Length: 382
Ligand code: TYM
Image (tube, rainbow, N blue to C red; front, side, top):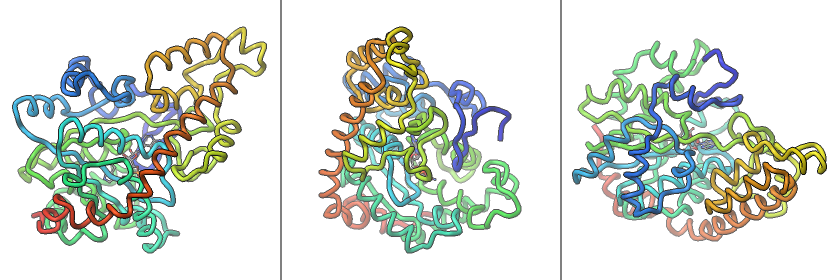
């Protein structure tokens, strides 16, 4: 895709990503100080840790969303998930952040579960599998704690009837070479995947209001297509807020991937497994021996345990500063930082699993009979 030592597409993320360069390549914008202070004002000083730490780092039209909001104009949030056997910690990032946005702005959230995308992209998967994974992943998403009156979760293969008229209008505006170039498809790609972008774009038009999409930056190519055609259909260009990728455990490049099990921590991993994975596989920026570590300290930029703490697991700013200082100066050893991380990850997972036990009873509220879900099932998008 680009002549770099990294690659970011919706289906492949690899290499050591230079995020400033990515902003220039994609043509997005850095989240400015003004935007941050606006968030700080709206959240009454309780800014989300992933905004404070520049994990959500880039955007399109976020300034317009905030300006509109200031003027009393509403917007809605949209995010999604291509279901797989298990969700890992990286997948939680956009959902945790979307929930925070819903809490502070009190707006509707639409969550698309793309069982169709997953099925069509992998010859070996059956629809039965992707549908079962969808169910399991939805339970994890519900556990994040969205407002049941203002959140609609839908599976593409089920909700397609209501979306299809608008999907056809979108598909009619997308030509083969645009989609091929945007996603790097070729003549061997199946035609389902060629058509699929119209289905990922359609929820940006579920309301005739601005739509804000929180996701990692890999999804941006879809929104570029959306932004080219939205106004011709009398809808707003989608606004976006992009996160970086939680790095895989075993290396500081790319993104955590479900296809390399030792590189990911799953939401279902029991405490012992979490501990073992972190102690054994987490890529360390520390020195090879204790003596050298005491003398030279760790390189925080490549150290995965530190990165994970920084991304989400240590929310206390004083504490992360202390760990960073002591680790980079050699006072802390890799094993000690890994222990801190394992404990924090297990704390988060334990809370998550407690909440997930109650997800099943909320399932039909979010998908079929909650306040927003009912409105959505009565509506044909055209
Ligand atoms: P999927 O299932 O690959 O990923 C779900 C969401 O998780 C983000 N993500 C990550 N974020 C941080 N660190 C990581 N290591 C990491 N890995 C994945 C993704 O950016 C995504 O936000 N086609 C989509 C499904 C979808 C969607 C959407 C996503 C449909 N509509 C609207 C976002 C917004 C997909 O395959 O996501």
